[in-house]
Image (cartoon, rainbow, N blue to C red; front, side, top):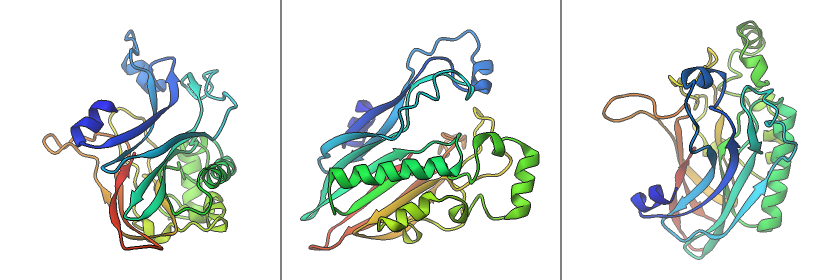
Length: 261
């Protein structure tokens, strides 16, 4: 992260979510059999041309559910968010980069959203907030969406659920009750999950990456394909999402929100 921030000419805040104890998921273990995972940390980060003030880590779970290998890979850690304050003009705005659980049911994601929003309120009561990240809003558990028969049944029930998960993911209701908006912050009806050669993906691409805002004026949401400019190969199993926000209330100030992972 330090090298990336230096390349971009930005400041950053980074925290570790997991230490991988193996070689990744089942497909990656086969692909990389016999190799060593020399750099097994991954986490969340904020980058900014303005100073990232009061960086903080907010842990969303502590049940150790990834440790025993039941989810095809062994990890130490848990889902989390990185928080920081960035001044947009004369207004201090709280930014959060977050990763919500994908293997669990929607109710678990809603519970993690409750923890996230309560933690943000403790961090900066009443402040303008921009949240971005992977909310894994697949409308079902990872086991269910990995089964083609179940996927077909889910699509019979609602053929648009994977690109419009709002009716099926109660975390949106949690956000709404806390005063957060998302409709103007995200491109509607388009998937943000990308097929990736290193991943075993389900047949349907899903909208799983989101911005949520409170107390700012959002505009110009965009989805940027995660493709290498030279080879055309996928760089990630997520597209980039981007947004412009203007701090409100206060003197006009705008800033481009860095793409969420």
